[in-house]
Length: 156
Image (cartoon, rainbow, N blue to C red; front, side):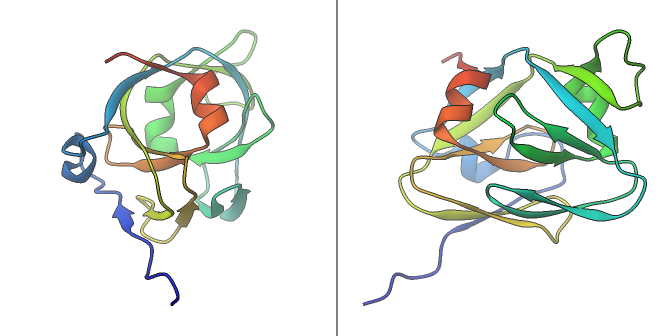
């Protein structure tokens, strides 16, 4: 018998945490640790290959390279709420940035799952053991177990 379709979690695009994550019995609150990352801003629409899937980026979006060499996209509209430049980098220009200690909700997943990102197009696939993350700004994401352990601190 083949497994059924994976559960899909959809980014709401609305500020606040989503009901499926906030009501989940295994959800935790966590805080992002401050880590320096490399950022460039795309001038044209493009795609970014992440370990969870292909993500569409619009002009002005940040393309980030994390501490383990992983890549992801953050929309221009949400970037300043999540990162600040490390001098001599100037805000809005390519360079080094540090993550802000924002709070999130997250669920450690026991089964595979999918996330439809806030752009309504990009779809990520999570594996058992990865974290489903709700950033509280209407966007969801997937974070591997190893990356979560080094970039977040559980606060409850």
